[in-house]
Image (cartoon, rainbow, N blue to C red; front, side, top):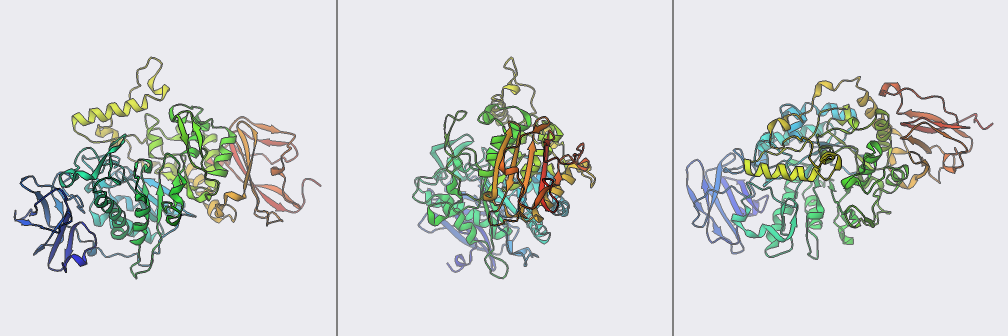
Length: 636
């Protein structure tokens, strides 16, 4: 029992002095043994009487391979809490000593969500090599661009040689495809030294379809009461749920503690079903924050973000207020309204959006568009009131892995709209009060596609392919006029995966997209108004269906130094007269001056004429930012 007191985690293989301590949860088993791969020796684990089995094995350490034997079954099972699977998810596990890595981020104190600029990335596609080590070489570039936080798509090990990562089955083992656990640590360490935070996308709503051996240890990991579109849900509120909850909450803490991660992004939390008095997510947020400490033992701040289709703001309310204690929420409403505005296509799950100026004004001011209204596409009520939620809690984006892939061929948004419209929406997005998130390559305007890919055996690959195509057929344009789906990339073909690797040769310092994003991020960071991310300073007005204005105003700032006016026109040139709208009026003793134009030739635009505030002329497919300037006013 003395060795057990020194454990870092309640489950798995722990390196201790003179050996390794093994502990596993197998409540339906009578006997459990650990098999040491090198010697083939079987060592019985002692039952603790609570469903757990444990034993201390002398003479082995970091790097040892092992597996488990259960009762009379002669199959060698990998550890459900394995820290590494060097030969894949079906093979034996490897002992990992996290203390062997020497960190260099002692000065890092963690991060909070306000002020962050997030960058979503898939390690396998981020570089041609697709490894942690190769990804490190690009981190200085991201820091220089204005990115502050990396959001890494799931890395929990999964079956196959490529995939998105959302079918993980070894939740504690970073996939061998990108390198070793210490390679992952070095990536985080390097990021911190560059001022970049790192959060990890984690999936706690289902296990992947192959390589999941948890049922051999306990049938209670899954719930048959709460099915998901990806398979059985996880059992958080049924029989033996306490053991499952510990497995998951400790996993969240594990990533924070052993990899010095700065937070987590929680996938599809609407399918984390839990009817318990205290929701799993409240326990998870508490456990994750409790694991965040600096090398000197000080509390470290982390960021927890949820993707939640039902748009339930309890996620970002305090645990003491019956909330879940998270920091932010993905805002699909903002993306969907922008996407329809950019493309003109309102089909399938975009059918609830019109892409009008009013929607964009409302999404900028209020965050969610659906806050309890009826969704005709979903045929149910959607959302909860979010009037009180600060703007920075909403993570906004024009592209992400799902939305790019759902364009059938993985096309990026700039390929689906006009350059001017894309630049105008980019300006609205990056100057708005939300927390912006880029999708890898977006910063330099890549045309590299991002498609759905998953390496499965033939039978499962066929099912996945048909399921994917059936989903995309719900877009009428993809289904085609005669009901036949257009030719789509095969998710199981390795060429589909390889086509998604970023082409960094297109990233140059004179790249117009890069200059646009860098200038806007600099403005967002340095401007005293935009840096506040205060949606309460915002009012908006609609000029016509495609043209709008956003006004930032602080009533306590009578001189108007913090006032900003953004004109966004996604249609043809707009001649606005009379301009009977008080939001366009400058503060007393000031007049408006152009600070930024998305039509600047440096960004690929055609230029911006001098501003006429007597007979307003708002150029089409543009965004123009105005700031107040004291002195001679055109009104005199």
